[in-house]
Each structure stands twice: as structure tokens, then as C-alpha cells.
Length: 218
Image (tube, rainbow, N blue to C red):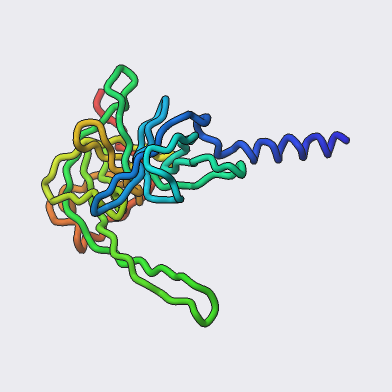
């Protein structure tokens, strides 16, 4: 019985491990543009997601946010899992704290993606712009910023950003209270020689565990 009770506790914990925030009531609005998105406005969160299900414009929904995903409740008790493209930042005392950084440059990475099965499977190549973002403490390597890489940056461009390493995401602020959600590939300590060049062709090593140098001054 003790073993059964322990197993039940473990399974219950696993079931709720990715719950993130609680469900909130909200409204879904379709954004008809070159880059179609759904705008979810809830009692707590305000996000834009990639299309992930069939909804009516203005439909009342219940959803929750966990990391870079929004989960929209379905009638069968399951959720639509939607990728967040942008987040609205509240303009109050609880707003996230942003850092300032500069885009050093970027390189192009080609990621192979497979779809289909067996003899009908195919490979297609997805090109990603991989940016080097220099801040006061680290240089961050980021890519896939926003839905369909809507976040496009130029060398020398100054950005406001925040980092959530637990999620593996870096969020770039734009248009006042919105954010591009970028994939965080790694970070490294600044190197004067390497940083004077465009990131294309740079051999600098990035790590998610890099730490700033200790202050040796008395």
C-alpha cells in the first residue's frame, strides 16, 4: 500500500509539472496579416500565438501560459498547444526588468527538418538567422526570434531584452510593450578581439553555463 501511495504521488506530481499558470478566461482575436497570429487577451496574460486550432474571431476561451507556450482548453478536456510569438508587457511596478545590448552581427544556420514516414518521408532545410547580442556581462547567441522569425535585427542595433534561462528563452522588447521570444542557444564572456568582428565566421565558444569573471579589486 505504501508503494502504491508513493507511486500515486509521483504520478500526480508529473501530471502537474508543466501546468505553469492557472487557467484564465479570455478572448481570442484573429490577426489577419502577412504573418497570421491569434491574440489572446486574458485576465492576467496578453499574448500572441501562432495559429494552433480552429476558432471563431472574438471567441471566449480559457487558457494558461507556461514558458513559451499557451495552452487553450478544449471541450474534451485536452489543450491546444500554441507557440507564443509575442508577449505584451504590463506597464506597472511588476513589469520585467530589461537589459540593454547591441547586435554584433549574425550568421546563417541551415537546420534540416524531416517530415513524413517511411518511403514518403522528406527533408527540408530551414534557414535560421543566428545573432550575437552583446550585453554588459555576456554575449548571447539567439535565433528564431518571433513567429516565422519576425524579429529581424541589424549589426549595431541596440535592443532591450530580458533572459529566462530556465525556459531557454531571451525576450526582445519592441513596440513599447511587446516582446519577441527568441531561442537562447548559449552565452559567452566578451572577448575584445573576437567582438570587433562580425559574428559570421567567429569561432568563439558559447556555453549556457558561462559566468562573469570575478572582481579581483580590493
